[in-house]
Length: 198
Image (tube, rainbow, N blue to C red; front, side):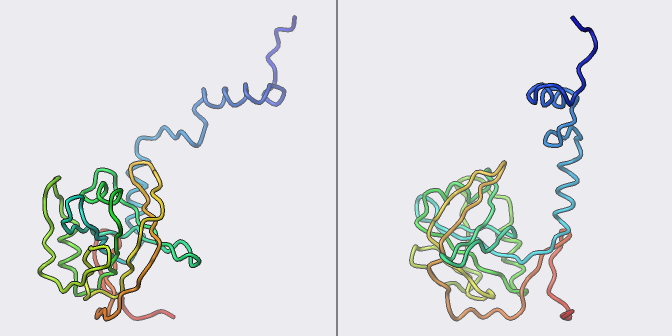
């Protein structure tokens, strides 16, 4: 019986994978403790528009959350997504809501961005009265001073680590929104757009 080690390229595939995992070389299991911090800092540099996600809580109260992780998904059917932290104020309400909306904030709505980003505890209430609003068919409030808004019915909730990705089917684009300049967030600060580059 040979006592020579078997080269890696002659081992069964399962054995080779096990050896890689034991060496800690699997890129999917990066052992560096600073990856999360570096990832957070890198993503903070990505500028994005600012929105307020709004819905009704299980007892019918209006609630909102400042969001930047928003994206269109599909045109046919029209779908939009928003990422919400699982331990966030509004997260559980999305699972039982008949609908939700996102208002894309204007630069003069910075106070709304700060207000709906504040820390809240279960049972806390949001006060929309400082801003002009209209009510969507499913009951949630839209900040009509924004650039635009989309109202949605739930399409899918996707589990994604410490967040859920809420995908909504857009059923209405509210008219009479009065915002003129969008509010932008990047590098942990709020901005208004400058001179167009192209």
